[in-house]
Image 1 (cartoon, helix red, strand yellow):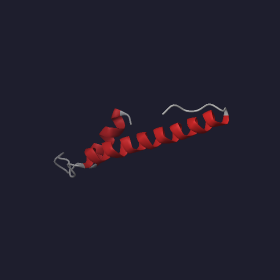
Image 2 (cartoon, one colour):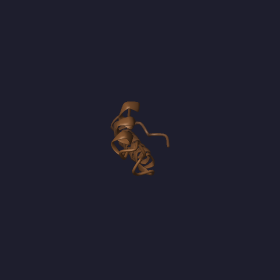
Image 3 (cartoon, rainbow, N blue to C red):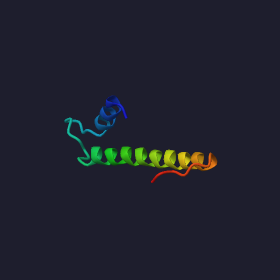
Image 4 (cartoon, rainbow, N blue to C red):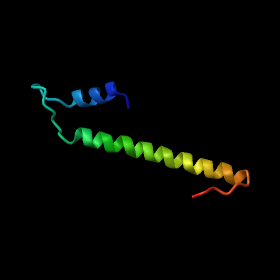
Length: 61
């Protein structure tokens, strides 16, 4: 996620005085971001294992 996207998320959740209305929002967004990152890594790992298996190569663990 680009810095501008983080800023948009944060700014969308500010009250009229500029204070964050959900102090845990950015923590939640960070967790969401890394969950997506790890899910994608798991998908890549699974596809790589299938490719190696198709080529007859045993994947190192």
